[in-house]
Length: 461
Image (cartoon, rainbow, N blue to C red; front, side, top):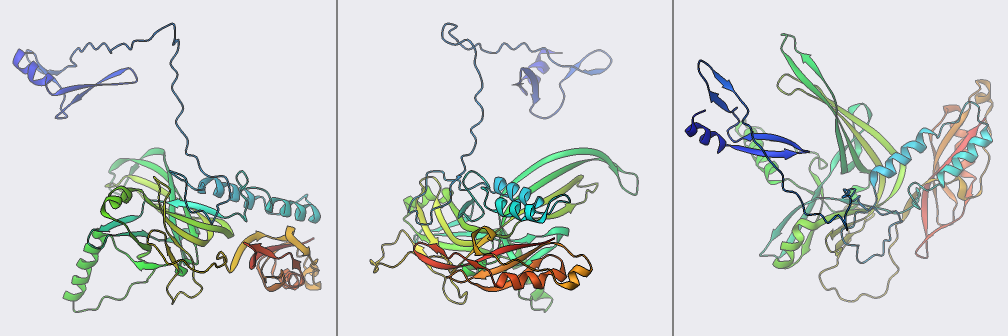
């Protein structure tokens, strides 16, 4: 290789050492070529690299061990609704751990072939009261951190606008739930395998298989909170282009479903200096209870093509919850900016607590509590659990098994409504009749008796 060319090439080569292996990185992406007689031949320059040796005192250090990565510290205690400050870098509860535990319990909720009815009933009641994670049970109050919402500051008004878009809920068989909306909590993705695929014309390409698991919160009472139609800047540009196309065609664009671009929203009053620090740290805390069905799965599938050789499966692990409150907070300091609480009438303004703007001191009032709270299986808290009797028609066809009855209890623990949600059709009426005769202990929150919804499990031998 001539000297001038050698200098030119080595100016375009960088070396990288990874796990003790030396890699040569060329700036222009071409191979280094040396000129020889007759033909040009690709060669690898001989590079001798001696990494700097750290100064280690043998007397004090004999072996250097790598420290394991720091694991996120999720909460394992029930959430306190009365909190006025959150811990720095608060993560809330772990959706993945809770979903997996609920999924395990649901898979074992069927009566075994060699299990007596009495044993099955005892097992179901016992499992309903078992902790899910640490001290957390199905009846605990949970708090899940959702981030990062879209934020935009108005310096003239000194207002930070915060919007968190909602998504449709994916059910089984790639169908959409028209009653609930969801928020994505986290994604676990991984490559599974690869294979050689071909199209009808014989073109071949390497196809990679991947799996992505989306852990989400699904809820039906989202309309009890401030909902706005929200579009990002890119979405606004796209919507404007589509609107012009409709206008050019002389047509009126149909109104879109309010759920399509729905978002939780709030405005936070803060000065410029505080906004600069807070903008990247504002997050949303979903305070909620678990409700039936506690955990359910949806899926989607993307086929590979020659131009996009990626075969992808998407699993949606939905944790079904009832929203209690929505908090907007600063994750770096734990400061709570706004607490939003539900309102029974979605036509009226939703109560919102601004924790930054000074408010006149109100007269002391009891701490607000949810009007109705949702529990899971409530057999264990029954004062009187009436036994369901199998009707003659069911006996004639040997119908048996468990029937789940959803009930609502008033403030005194009486059953005011009951409806069967699963089980043999010939057994459901008897189960509902028995449920209406059951009696439960009142549920009290902050000194106030509240209504409760839950599930009574009746087992017919």
